[in-house]
Image (cartoon, rainbow, N blue to C red; front, side, top):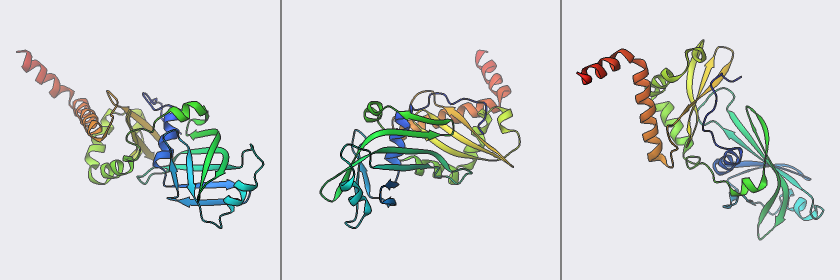
Length: 241
């Protein structure tokens, strides 16, 4: 159950899907022969095609070879897991349906359908948009950035909550960073029996970690100003004099 504050300046579904794909270390593959889990065995091309390095005794090889020509033969599933421990850590799931093409020790996957499920619901991602989209520039660094923020800067998280509508904080027992991308930071607000997410958009997109650092400083400055409006007003009055 989310809060009333809307997600502004968020990535498109295609960009989100490509970010999930870029950051995932594992995937589950469901094919004619069953379901297999692969860790660190897949790679992704610039246009979003997935290739898998599989053992010779993998049932996927048999499924790929025996599947009727031209028909979808498998579904790849990737989970977008929040790096910071929070309730409901699965932030999104990505399913890619299609067929495997056997290669030299690897299986290349040709997608026929891409579905991204987020808390707001599932959306079918256009294949051309998926191929053309680029992952968020912070996608592969996000886990380290968020765990550092949560572990080393709880004071900064507390300051950032000053930018959140008071109604969204009613009954809150814990606030943790849930996600960050080039467009903004998302906080998970946990209550005794529920939770919600609030988006803090950046004033401009961050293209790298250095840009993110600057955007976070701006948010923290805004939070400090929001907490001390009278002091800020006195500074302005003194300056006018």
